[in-house]
Length: 172
Image (tube, rainbow, N blue to C red):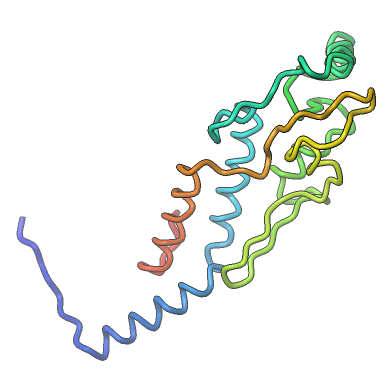
């Protein structure tokens, strides 16, 4: 298979470099792809209880009273499992949907140029992410990182952006 080299000339090369420069400073056209990537990563983070990003969320061993309450709600059929940071099936679950549903009222997403904002407006989210404060029983809230991307997933995000910058095409 022969290799074909195409010389564009100075004019065309400069035009392509200007287009790349514009794409370098404006990721808005691939905002949907970036947003989808971040939502997918959050779903995997919760499903794996942190392991997808190279961490493991602590179990309820340090929160025995909270763990017992949650187990009682599962036993009564009011919740669908003991998943950490989830109130699965409960009418008041906020954290997970706010990070995984674009249209959730507490979901945060914006992109302007190369500035990306992704997260949640749920006021207690930072307590779980940082391991700060106490639950309703006075038990220390352990750190369960939610604002995290593994090196591998940061690289995937970089690749998505690099394809845009170099080729001017969305990745999907």
